[in-house]
Image (cartoon, rainbow, N blue to C red; front, side, top):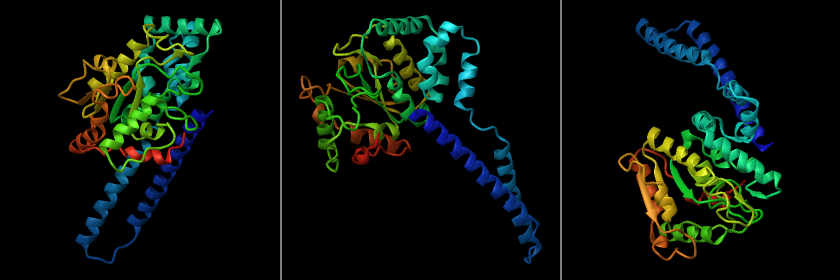
Length: 320
């Protein structure tokens, strides 16, 4: 429901913006018809500026609006058989439209169909899975491809109740931060002294700011870590990383632990900044993670490449 509301808000904002542009266009037409008391050269200059503005607004108003989610789904599903449509129902209904367009070919590959059949079997056997279906692709909705500046790779979702919500290392607002996330906060505090460690563990505001929080595997069986590893999610998230690696430039990849470092081996280090450190787990955090300074390094790189920094302290006002 929250996804539908968000998409409706975007559509309403788009309509309002186009109406405002139309009003401005009409005002410019009226201005161009008024007689000017200045000399001819001044009048010609004003007419030229007005004409340029009119041309810009006219071309913009004639442009088609962004396709609605229904348009995207219709285009994507047009050639799918009924089984594939059923298997991909969650993807088609909950994945961000930008990511859906990018990944639609990947979603139709045989391995992904097998993955979805495996998940369907898990559910039919009354297995409890995390995160809940509507939140599997939260990462895509909070951080569309056009907004990505930093990528943090996790492994698989938290496997205890009420923790996983589709963003790696993050938990919902009312859930205490798990140990690994507390260590991330400590490392960040060591790096940026003004950072105030929040009492919650919700990283939604980072995601909204352009930090893609992506797990290697997107689902897990309750209380069974790594239970969905090797089922196909790794290939899918490889495709996500491959797209960002090939189609974007100037991104920062934070790879924590051997699993993430191995997954990021193919990232082009001439196009992107790749930062590697030990995993923030209590078992490995003291092998350099707390002094890795990844957050300040990321912001310096973004500045040097003409991009806006990440406000890491934005978690203070986090709202899910």
